[in-house]
Image 1 (tube, rainbow, N blue to C red):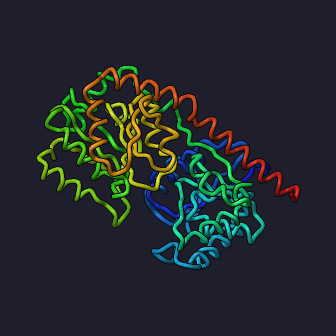
Image 2 (cartoon, one colour):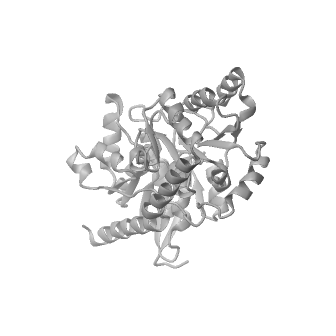
Length: 389
């Protein structure tokens, strides 16, 4: 090991590798290992651990969350001490909290031990009155705050102390991996057969956890309005769910009641979605709330798919209405069906919007740019710490 490398302890509480956790996996995979030494603190087994193992990234395990309600007043105090123990053992140069919730523990632990820290805001947080204090105080204990969307940054800029240390670093993707296939039509027929669809299927895909907030039910209702008009159309829901929040049984019941169950396909968690995105004709994210800068939309754009998304979080920073897709209001099943109708009816429009989305992804969301920005922040934090500023 190079003794000059900067050691970064990343801290994560979720075991399921949803969008934010996949962002963490990208960070630790693409860090310049000649300069940085990543270690990840996790709570236990799950597909996040599997992802770290696949990437050969070292991780340590420690139970952090003592209560189901993570925002119970002062419950965070019981999570600070286990993190402090890990910090004493690992002796990192920087602590990076992967989202605001875990930052309650790791940010305060780092602050107590005099270690510089940063937290990534992966969702747009507009706190309710009862937990506003908890969240804002959590941000204040970090040396730097990174929002993955402009909207996420704007929410907190009314506080001068937070505004002084919050920046935006937008999500980036590996555009060599996420890209449209050159022989897409031929390979699409093969993938369609693999998932039990006709070779000429028109595929609408949503990649999101199977939880109510992702709007899977709203998308299914919109699809059911169009199913008779477009007999070639199929709906693909790619996800998996956190324990206790899986709404796939509800989706199955709705599809059966509408007589379209044979045209609605659900998968469990899928690590590599490039194949599915190249099968897809239209990508959707019908979230009802709690989004930042959605990875699934950027990945879809990078594969030249037209996109339809709800106007939540930083979605409007990705979707230029009428240029690379359509931006709609939440829970608006009729409007969602109308926009899907426009795209299903017009292959030329799908191609036009998909091509523009690919251009935007390549211009603004290359992972190399994201990594340069994060590495600059890490170097700056270490320099400030060592100089005592």
